[in-house]
Image (cartoon, rainbow, N blue to C red):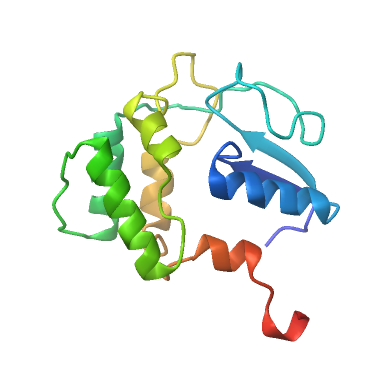
Length: 160
């Protein structure tokens, strides 16, 4: 494990959970960098978090469907992949969120996925292929479930 540099990278800082995570880290004195697919949209943390536009994709590209299938294969799951309208996905995500007491997927994230924002249109700058990383980490992906609200917003009993 490497030493803590005091710098945190937050993906999805425009989303419900991501923006609150980034703000909480900043409030605690941490240095924060954010990732977004919306560099032209006003940044909710502009001036507080690092401002640099970098496309970190690559060196391989895949569609969202290919990404989901790759993860499913890496973890040995056999669950079906369903293509549903965004409204149905949003309702199912809210229901699952109530069940696990978490924010699973926001309507904004669903909109971004539907709009193809996972796809980079710039030359890839990354040097690690996702498929290689996935193969190396497949035994630890998704186990155990990590509740984002619990991890970032609920203080441990000993600290209260």
